[in-house]
Length: 259
Image (cartoon, rainbow, N blue to C red):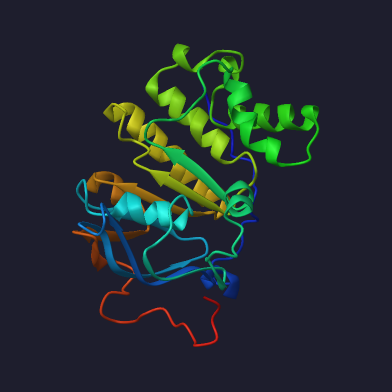
């Protein structure tokens, strides 16, 4: 089935425009430990992500890449360090729930679809955070599912879908609230090679058509190579960055930045 263009939630702009280089995420010295400090998941990570970038975070299992994504998504809190979203400190006064509901879209390796709800109902779930009517939610979900080539699966259930189809539903759901950032944690990890290639092509198309900021975590170098920027991690640290930050620059935080 042909896949329709993804509906734009972020206006496509000229890449030469100043807004294309706005800093959307800034981090300095991010650290995260578990088990009373015995497990060091992140060790002093410095990072800058510009609006509209497609960044792959690559590394082996246990290197800290998913932990970093969880901190960016405010699913976890850092033990130390500073983190800004669009210039605002992400701290105890930051409204993480509103941030996740309106600014972020999530795609997970395990899909996280609700098995007792239909495909179109699953895509509507994030929209209950809005004041949209039932008709508006249905129309939005219908259009998103059409855009990922699943028109004939609207009333089916996740257990009736292939792995690749489930992940396409998850991608459609991640776009439901028109987020400006897509966080994808091993989105191809549970898929065969053909389905993985299809999902990656879909994510690349979303980036191209919407200029949405995408951070994608993967252990697969072939998947990471399809992003426009590649960050490599090992033992809780960033060891290389094709964006050129390592050894060149650190995020700047003034003493007046809110804690």
